[in-house]
Image (cartoon, rainbow, N blue to C red; front, side, top):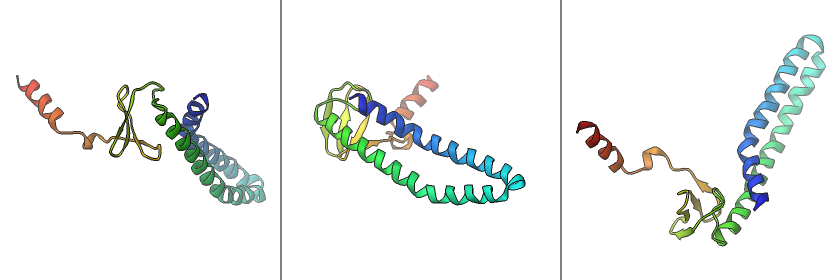
Length: 130
């Protein structure tokens, strides 16, 4: 379970870390452009070539997280809140504790505000009028 917590954190932080690394390489390449042009060219080529490695690494981490999430869901524990109970629904899994929804492959679904029923907005309108 600790491995799943660490992996969930790494997957959430991975895009920001990758963006920061590419941003730092851009700044260094920009500085090198005026002082050492061959260094700037090397950094640009290395950045383009490493993009495939970064994308494949992200996919591998997400796949491993899905495997661990499915195992936790089968044991009745929610990967998001580490508690439960978790119930099986037609689309996958749902946690009663934190209301997180998971697909059958272990991916956590994000519920958009537009997907929620309009009953809540009607209740809010009735309260504000009264």
